[in-house]
Length: 125
Image (cartoon, rainbow, N blue to C red; front, side, top):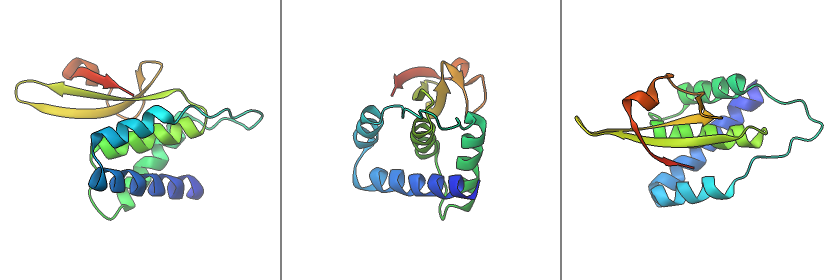
């Protein structure tokens, strides 16, 4: 588990750098090119364990982790371990709010299950 938390922490740094040097398009492009890894004969990691590793890395991160950073990192980690994860970005009109979360086969894995009822889905990547 320590290695997963370290990998998660490094992914958070990578996304943080992209958020500050680039923009949403650079994060979107990264998620578009990173495909689901073929894990072959390796034992698959449970998606819940991978999400937990990201959550722990967020606790120890040196700044506040926002939903976009957390969801992008979670998507990359899940794909690295063979899960068909999608980051979803949604918005609520009144009052205006936006939010990002991760889904595997249209099931929300890193947030509350009612996010699609609260937010209108704008993008999946």
